Amino acid sequence: MAKKKIQKPGSNTIALNRSVRHDFFIEEEFEAGLSLLGWEVKSLRAGKANISDSYVVFNKGEAFLFGATIQPLLAASTHTVCDPLRTRKLLLNQKEIEKIFGKISRDGYTAVAISLYWKNAWAKVKIGIAKGKKSHDKREDVKDREWKIDKERIMKNAGRNG
Image (cartoon, rainbow, N blue to C red; front, side, top):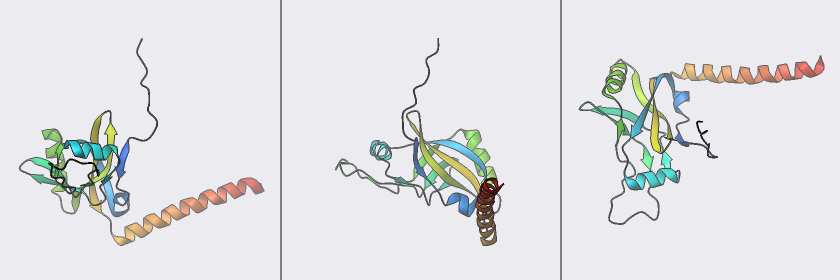
């Protein structure tokens, strides 16, 4: 008989990029591993990460996460240089790298980090192929969101009166 997986309480999410869905249309998402140093893993376990301005760059056929900040712990070792803004290598298959690179080669597209999370014991980052939104698109999204809230409020009150 197979053993059931025991879910630990709490979320696996380390950091979220909340502004990415507001500023971009996300067309496709990929999951990538991160090549991290020991102090970075400890900091991620403590939740000291920020990916709000991070994006993916390609160099010599490899993908790197640029702009992600991982703050070192106060008790970090003194003989290691801790660079919070270090460019971190993304662990992807060659086919995935070629697919992402092909999609962002088009005009107006970029690859941005959406979220940073734990999958089993491994730190993973969710990458999105994104196209920038214009300001009128953002206003339209806000109108749609407000209308959805108003509609729910009207339906809730209509049920009480009827």
